[in-house]
Length: 442
Ligand code: PMP
Image 1 (cartoon, protein in one colour):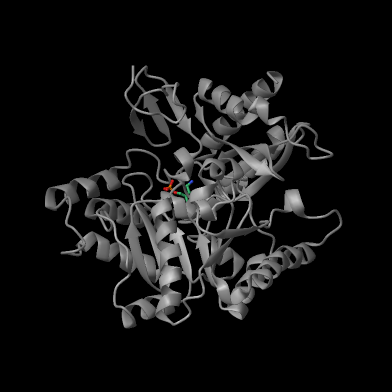
Image 2: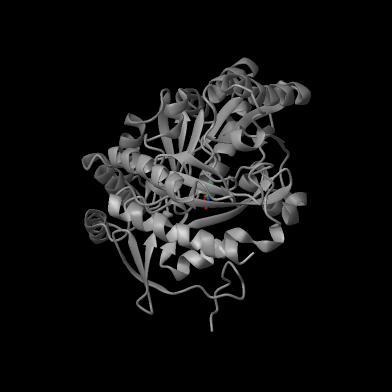
């Protein structure tokens, strides 16, 4: 009996009672190796003593103070740290409680920026298909997942979508990366010209696509071209690094690997590692200046923004990652994970692609490797893989993405940054068995 509306309304999931390191334990004593960090959240694993101690200290000192009255030491220290290590041009951060809130705030900052600088006609948002930006109405409008949008379509703000840079699905045979980057960015330019660029406020994109298509990195030069287009047409570039950011791909920010800096950038998940709900928007100086020198305040706000407990957790998580040089482990174990996935599953006739960066990796499953045709969506292969994995004590994040309007099957891996080679072996062994068992069942 439950009184919670769970994700699958009629299915009550196992009751999680404790966690340590890379494992979660349920009420029946079953242990689960957390190979997905939940949804790419738990970057330090569970029960990290330094984060727990920081939270105890903050709770003893002060749990909450409203930002309408006060700032707090952990929030200020966190902001100092985030800005010090931010992409070029970032001068401030806006602290919220999660990814969707961060995307909403970024969209509204983009809009307010143009109102402040006297371009109120800029109101449209351009985003990409096969993308996820959150489930609140603004973030959902930006997202390109047809299934998630469908029931709410009449409520969504005007957003226009172009194809993402998704080599496995859209790069043509024989097309070089450079040509594909030009073609994929060209789709954005065509859309801006079609809409009238002077009506567009922002282009929103995940630097490495996460929840809808499964760890899809762009080809080299795509984002440099996007950056140039945004500059040429006066459109703000919002990078959504809620899932791929804060070290997940092996550098603190995924955009560093693309050689671009955003005007606005969202992070969440790995920022607080799940120890508290927290997200942030990074603002380039021109956005801050327009608001500060214009009306003087961002016309927005949430009761729990800048929450001292959340800030203390994020600060401790980020200090621990830096102190223990865990991004070096993300890169080393990420390479190892990719290699072992290729060895274990690369020859499977139904594993179409193994991709990603750092400890952000995915498998794409296909009915036919030659044509890359997805499985019949009714089979829900991704959900079967999740069930088989959970039965083997393994957490992986399955997704039915959207490919040309059809659902495809992906499995996302995003283990904690503290994984060892032994953990990588266990993940790949159990995942290999789970995938094979699920494929036998369809
Ligand atoms: N943006 C991206 C890229 C995400 O992956 C997510 C969450 N999966 C969100 C936004 C929304 O974050 P939240 O679930 O914390 O609201």
